[in-house]
Image (tube, rainbow, N blue to C red; front, top):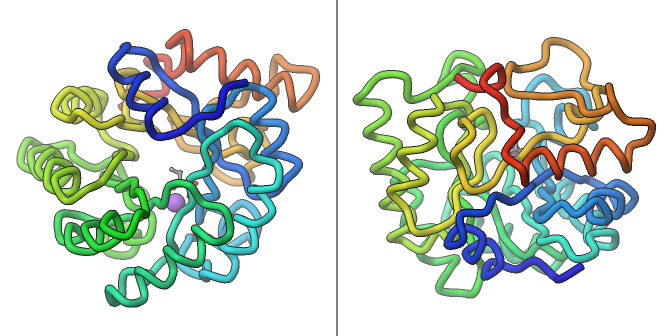
Length: 263
Ligand code: KIV
Ligand code: NA
């Protein structure tokens, strides 16, 4: 399979083709996902929940992220490896640069960070130094306590307008990709149309350029309440490899997400 780079994602957007993304935290699952054709693998700080058993992503450290990045990088194959910066990596510009440097040295090819328009300066500093950035907007799990829970964002017109504006500001600052979590499908579409860079969605409707899910949700091994936007692809699969393939094909053919997965 051809190596996926940022240019590949841009070409998908220009061609109006979707691309598939999935979290991966170790070499074996990264390899399986890559073999299934997944375009982008994310070492997400969701590892705090699905691997470590916490009820939020806040306890995840840069050392945790670096460790799992090293593991996933060894299995990533042709897929592009995106890596989350953890809670408080943005405490200072110096820390942001150090943490981004650590994940890039561990094998990251794209760094993802949560943050609104105020992250523009940090993104400018990173991209200047050759670190490509994906900016995560909408429901940002690192701010869960401020948001008052894991809730759909951008439901009212003013909030939606703010998210569109934040995305534009961050792209202007250098962000190469935008990720939108848990927003109405209409907002997912509006942001995707407003930007020249690829937009990845999770619970952001069918019209974003790419789709992402947490691997554990795709395999149906998440415990507790699962969000509306997830689909267990293990139900109709006889192996993990097949479940990943079905997810990949469902994204590529725009069969996933279906209306019941959207807000
Ligand atoms: O940490 C993560 O897995 C993520 C995705 C849900 C987008 O940020
Ligand atoms: Na994350």
